[in-house]
Every structure is written in structure tokens, then in C-alpha cells.
Length: 144
Image (cartoon, rainbow, N blue to C red):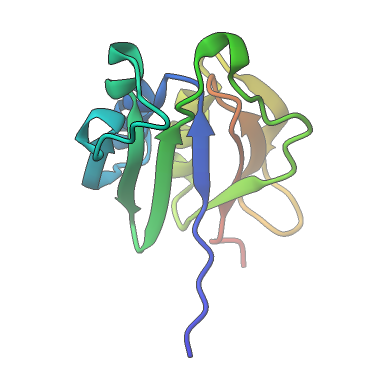
């Protein structure tokens, strides 16, 4: 039996924008994307036209890894917010320049929590929260 964990990012209406951002920053490849409008109608929980435009589920391929993204379907005044988010996604490369490129792009409109720098365990390590509130560790695995 194989066990695999896949990060799943849930956003409040910005999933399409985030997908495009991650396509550029992480060279992600969209495998599939479905909106709430693509889903069968549920008479007990009808979606507004605004919600029908939101991403219900997207699967992206980032290198050998999967990344899933969706929007919450709850209207904005009731939208849920992930308080005290405790998951950090680790992006590992073998190239310091690639790590710098990813880190610098993620920090735009985001927040640097730990600058990208050489450490005892990495040629370039840093921690950044992007403009969508997702936190990443960038690790460069080329230190000898």
C-alpha cells in the first residue's frame, strides 16, 4: 500500500488567480480544474452565479508532486478563514538560483518570515508567506 500526502490550498475567491501565479512561480502544470458551475445542481444548496465561477477543485502538477487548490463556496460574508494555519509547504530544489527566483516571486505582496540564506543544512533556505497566505519553506539541497 502506498501512502501519499498532498497539500490542498483552500482560498476565498482567488483560486484562479493563485493557479496562474503558481503556474509561473513553480512551473506548475494544470492537470484538471472544475468550477462550482461545472458541478451538478443541488436543490438544497443552490450556488449563486458568483459562486458558480469559483474553483471547486483544481489539480496541479509541480515537478513530481501534486498540489490541489479550491475556493470555499460559502458567500463572502460567511466565508471561512483558516485561523492559525499550521501547514507549511516545503519546496526543494538543487539550484540556488532557482530557489532565489521562487523565493523572490513568492514574497511579492507577501511576507518574508526568514530571509533566504545559507544555513548549516541548506545552501539557500528561507521561509515566506505568499500573497494568498500560504507559507513555504524554500530548501536548496546542494550543500555538501
